Image (cartoon, rainbow, N blue to C red; front, side, top):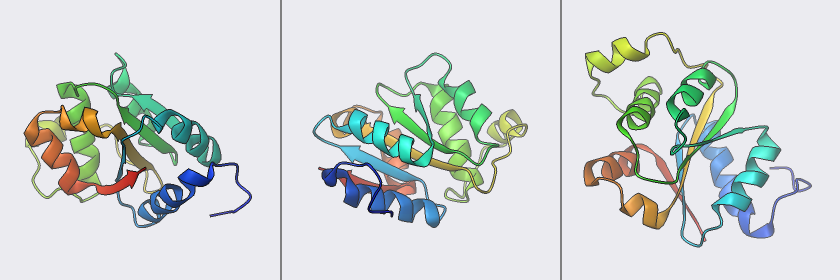
Length: 152
Protein backbone atom coordinates (compact mmCIF):
# COMPACT_ATOMS: atom_id res chain seq x y z
CA UNK A 1 0.00 0.00 0.00
CA UNK A 2 1.23 3.47 -0.80
CA UNK A 3 2.29 5.07 2.47
CA UNK A 4 1.36 8.48 1.07
CA UNK A 5 -2.31 7.63 0.78
CA UNK A 6 -4.54 9.66 3.04
CA UNK A 7 -5.78 7.11 5.57
CA UNK A 8 -5.84 7.28 9.36
CA UNK A 9 -3.01 5.42 11.05
CA UNK A 10 -5.54 3.20 12.88
CA UNK A 11 -6.86 1.97 9.52
CA UNK A 12 -3.54 1.11 7.87
CA UNK A 13 -3.41 -2.49 9.07
CA UNK A 14 -7.05 -3.25 8.08
CA UNK A 15 -6.39 -1.57 4.72
CA UNK A 16 -3.37 -3.84 4.14
CA UNK A 17 -5.54 -6.88 5.01
CA UNK A 18 -8.32 -5.66 2.73
CA UNK A 19 -5.95 -5.21 -0.19
CA UNK A 20 -4.40 -8.63 0.40
CA UNK A 21 -7.85 -10.25 0.40
CA UNK A 22 -8.71 -8.41 -2.84
CA UNK A 23 -5.42 -9.54 -4.36
CA UNK A 24 -6.34 -13.15 -3.53
CA UNK A 25 -9.88 -12.68 -4.99
CA UNK A 26 -11.34 -13.29 -1.55
CA UNK A 27 -14.38 -11.53 -0.12
CA UNK A 28 -13.31 -9.75 3.07
CA UNK A 29 -15.72 -9.24 5.95
CA UNK A 30 -14.55 -6.19 7.90
CA UNK A 31 -15.85 -6.22 11.47
CA UNK A 32 -15.89 -2.99 13.43
CA UNK A 33 -16.65 -2.85 17.13
CA UNK A 34 -16.27 0.83 17.80
CA UNK A 35 -18.51 2.51 15.23
CA UNK A 36 -15.56 3.52 13.04
CA UNK A 37 -16.89 1.98 9.85
CA UNK A 38 -18.00 5.28 8.32
CA UNK A 39 -14.59 7.03 8.44
CA UNK A 40 -12.89 3.85 7.23
CA UNK A 41 -15.35 3.48 4.35
CA UNK A 42 -14.99 7.11 3.39
CA UNK A 43 -11.20 6.80 3.27
CA UNK A 44 -10.90 3.30 1.76
CA UNK A 45 -13.56 3.87 -0.90
CA UNK A 46 -11.91 7.17 -1.77
CA UNK A 47 -8.48 5.59 -2.15
CA UNK A 48 -9.79 2.67 -4.23
CA UNK A 49 -12.43 4.66 -6.13
CA UNK A 50 -14.93 2.22 -4.65
CA UNK A 51 -18.68 2.30 -4.42
CA UNK A 52 -20.40 2.08 -1.02
CA UNK A 53 -23.78 0.36 -0.87
CA UNK A 54 -25.88 0.18 2.30
CA UNK A 55 -27.77 -3.11 2.61
CA UNK A 56 -30.71 -1.29 4.21
CA UNK A 57 -31.21 0.80 1.07
CA UNK A 58 -34.35 -0.13 -0.81
CA UNK A 59 -32.37 -0.67 -4.01
CA UNK A 60 -29.27 -2.32 -2.51
CA UNK A 61 -29.68 -5.51 -4.55
CA UNK A 62 -30.09 -3.57 -7.80
CA UNK A 63 -27.05 -1.43 -6.96
CA UNK A 64 -24.93 -4.49 -6.21
CA UNK A 65 -26.00 -6.37 -9.33
CA UNK A 66 -25.45 -3.31 -11.52
CA UNK A 67 -21.83 -3.07 -10.34
CA UNK A 68 -20.66 -6.70 -10.38
CA UNK A 69 -20.01 -6.57 -14.13
CA UNK A 70 -17.55 -3.71 -13.71
CA UNK A 71 -13.95 -3.68 -12.52
CA UNK A 72 -14.99 -1.74 -9.40
CA UNK A 73 -14.42 -2.19 -5.70
CA UNK A 74 -17.74 -2.53 -3.90
CA UNK A 75 -18.16 -1.95 -0.17
CA UNK A 76 -21.44 -3.51 0.94
CA UNK A 77 -22.36 -2.23 4.39
CA UNK A 78 -24.60 -4.47 6.46
CA UNK A 79 -26.22 -1.80 8.59
CA UNK A 80 -29.42 -3.64 9.56
CA UNK A 81 -31.00 -7.07 9.33
CA UNK A 82 -30.28 -8.46 5.84
CA UNK A 83 -33.36 -8.88 3.72
CA UNK A 84 -33.67 -12.01 1.57
CA UNK A 85 -32.85 -10.26 -1.71
CA UNK A 86 -29.58 -8.74 -0.48
CA UNK A 87 -28.59 -11.99 1.22
CA UNK A 88 -29.28 -13.95 -2.00
CA UNK A 89 -27.20 -11.46 -4.02
CA UNK A 90 -24.30 -11.88 -1.57
CA UNK A 91 -24.67 -15.66 -1.83
CA UNK A 92 -24.62 -15.36 -5.62
CA UNK A 93 -21.39 -13.35 -5.46
CA UNK A 94 -19.75 -15.84 -3.09
CA UNK A 95 -20.79 -18.70 -5.35
CA UNK A 96 -19.51 -17.04 -8.51
CA UNK A 97 -16.21 -16.40 -6.75
CA UNK A 98 -16.13 -20.16 -6.02
CA UNK A 99 -16.23 -19.53 -2.30
CA UNK A 100 -19.37 -21.53 -1.69
CA UNK A 101 -19.72 -24.94 -3.35
CA UNK A 102 -23.46 -25.49 -3.00
CA UNK A 103 -25.77 -23.56 -5.25
CA UNK A 104 -29.49 -23.47 -5.72
CA UNK A 105 -30.60 -23.72 -9.37
CA UNK A 106 -33.35 -21.17 -8.75
CA UNK A 107 -30.81 -18.55 -7.66
CA UNK A 108 -28.58 -19.40 -10.61
CA UNK A 109 -31.46 -18.69 -13.01
CA UNK A 110 -32.30 -15.46 -11.21
CA UNK A 111 -28.79 -14.03 -11.45
CA UNK A 112 -27.52 -15.47 -14.73
CA UNK A 113 -27.84 -12.05 -16.40
CA UNK A 114 -25.32 -10.57 -13.95
CA UNK A 115 -21.90 -12.05 -14.72
CA UNK A 116 -19.11 -10.91 -12.41
CA UNK A 117 -16.14 -9.12 -13.92
CA UNK A 118 -12.96 -10.98 -12.91
CA UNK A 119 -11.51 -7.66 -11.66
CA UNK A 120 -14.55 -6.82 -9.54
CA UNK A 121 -14.02 -6.96 -5.79
CA UNK A 122 -16.55 -7.02 -2.97
CA UNK A 123 -15.90 -6.19 0.67
CA UNK A 124 -18.61 -6.69 3.27
CA UNK A 125 -18.49 -4.18 6.12
CA UNK A 126 -20.44 -4.30 9.36
CA UNK A 127 -20.40 -3.63 13.07
CA UNK A 128 -19.96 -6.60 15.38
CA UNK A 129 -23.31 -6.05 17.11
CA UNK A 130 -25.12 -5.87 13.76
CA UNK A 131 -23.50 -9.11 12.61
CA UNK A 132 -24.50 -10.80 15.88
CA UNK A 133 -28.11 -9.69 15.31
CA UNK A 134 -28.33 -11.50 11.94
CA UNK A 135 -30.08 -14.84 11.68
CA UNK A 136 -27.65 -17.49 12.99
CA UNK A 137 -27.43 -19.40 9.70
CA UNK A 138 -26.73 -16.20 7.74
CA UNK A 139 -24.16 -15.00 10.23
CA UNK A 140 -22.42 -18.37 10.14
CA UNK A 141 -22.51 -18.41 6.32
CA UNK A 142 -20.91 -14.97 6.09
CA UNK A 143 -18.28 -15.77 8.70
CA UNK A 144 -17.34 -19.09 7.13
CA UNK A 145 -17.15 -17.92 3.54
CA UNK A 146 -15.53 -14.53 3.94
CA UNK A 147 -12.08 -13.50 5.04
CA UNK A 148 -12.73 -11.88 8.41
CA UNK A 149 -10.81 -8.73 9.25
CA UNK A 150 -11.28 -7.24 12.72
CA UNK A 151 -10.91 -3.47 12.89
CA UNK A 152 -10.28 -2.03 16.32
